[in-house]
Length: 100
Image 1 (cartoon, one colour):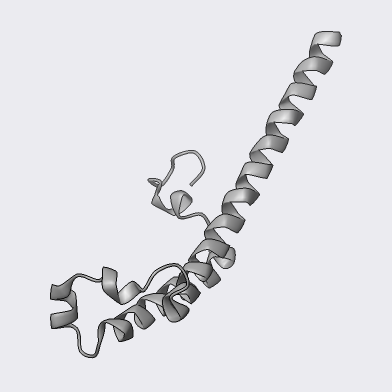
Image 2 (cartoon, rainbow, N blue to C red; image 1 turned 120 degrees about the vertical axis):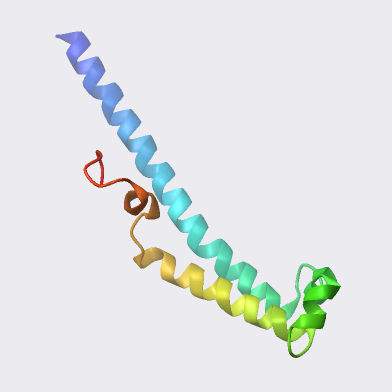
């Protein structure tokens, strides 16, 4: 009887750890792109146009900073849409496989 209770307790612990890991990743992949996108506008960490390859600056209309504004908007949009997205891994499974 004690082994059944120990196994149930172990399963609850594993389920709890998986739940915590899920939320840690969910929050991380929501907050990080938003912060990185905002950084493209204010250049807090680095001056982003300096890190843009010269050939991209030559083919893009506008300046390197304009392109980094666009990248920032894309990052903010990706982070903002993340809480409402379903798992992309679930959608990439073949039909009929477990979890699809």
